[in-house]
Length: 313
Length: 258
Image (cartoon, rainbow over all chains, first blue to last red; front, side, top):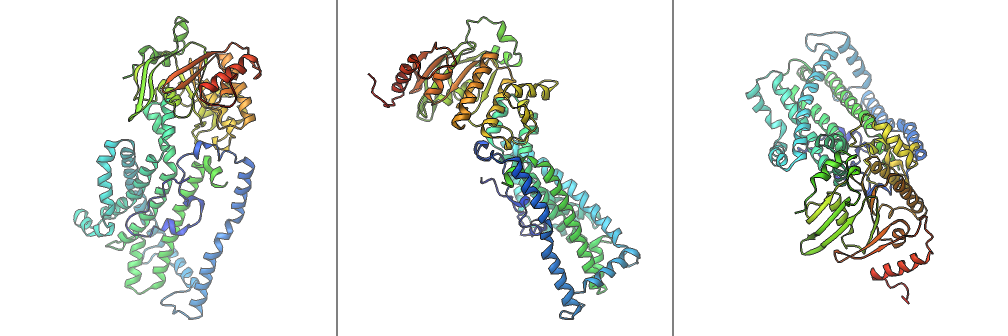
């Protein structure tokens, strides 16, 4: 085996994606091509795949046990007073705070769903721009030496820049409106997708490229039928990391001079010493992050059906 | 530099063309073909003709340039020098099936074909190789023999005038190998391509080929024509004596040559 390991985002930032799902098969390094000759792994039968597939689904609830235990301990230590309610509000308190934030629009906070919509929009726009750039640049760099020599040095340099250290620069350049926030998210999202897609393209089996040549594939067909599908496992790893960084960048961007959004709610909660509100907003971040990660995993499961046999063997 | 005949390139686009040419002209022809990797000479001034519809087997020890020659004929080696002409569409079956794992079997077969009904064309080729039932399977779920039959269908569907087989049976188990030999022969008889089979198995060459070439030191050291009718009994006296001859050529001292 020994495909290229997923490239970690190089800023020391914990990418939420990878910490949340430490052991799922999606996290294993993708195998860019079939094994040696495809023969040793060809013995996997349809029957064995269905069996393991069903087992995975049945045991899915096992993954809920440890988070549930954490929440239970949280509730116990906050209600029994081991930790003061000011430091760690109980889950039941947070629930009623959340309900209150959703049902009533206060001048201080607005509504929770309103803030959520604004934050989601920022991530969506920033991710679309940054991810799009990352993907296109990786394809340009991955397909030719000229592209690599042109694009890669710049991307590698950007990668080493501390993302959040750029905030003051972005404020000077773009003011304090949406532009610096979107730029920050876009830049953060572009890098992991670029790195993984580039590595994925370069990891495509040269024997398949040779096959494409023998079969008389045009360059466009080669890219569509061989290169991009071969790089797809890595592209999806990059996609998940990019989404993680996009959410991270959003949190940071929103705590600076935002007048709406989840980060703004956190800032207001801090100003008015309302820990409950801060915790509720953090929970919303967490849920949104898990949700986007789940969506990518669904895409992964659909797009990579062809290699399920290997992973579950 | 090798010169690839421009007529050959045209013929690749238009499979009807080679049929209209004179049957005396070979589908592949090399003169003074050489290839070296650094100081190591792999092909040394090699002359070879492969006639239309001829089944040629090429044997030789490892590293004698069998695969290099095949890759040159397939247009995959840009470093050869000398004359090289291929005047028919070429298809290759590699040692490993080399199926694209993210395309279903039928899509592998029709990959790169310019046809309005790729699926139908692929299906009929798969029927010929006895794999129609697995047309919608993922390649990684195929057995070794099935995968190689899919690769054969992929070569066949291109209607090649020259079929290059690069040790396509070497990874198969003994039983699968025998049935795949039969399949290759029946496909060859039906479609009549010229075949160049690279192998290191003397018995395989004796069972299949019209002509067996022994490659040694970058040149054709020995050429033997076989006229025994197929299917061949491996104990046929002609084959027994030829086997001894070929093994001697290969420098394998298995028994006394009396």
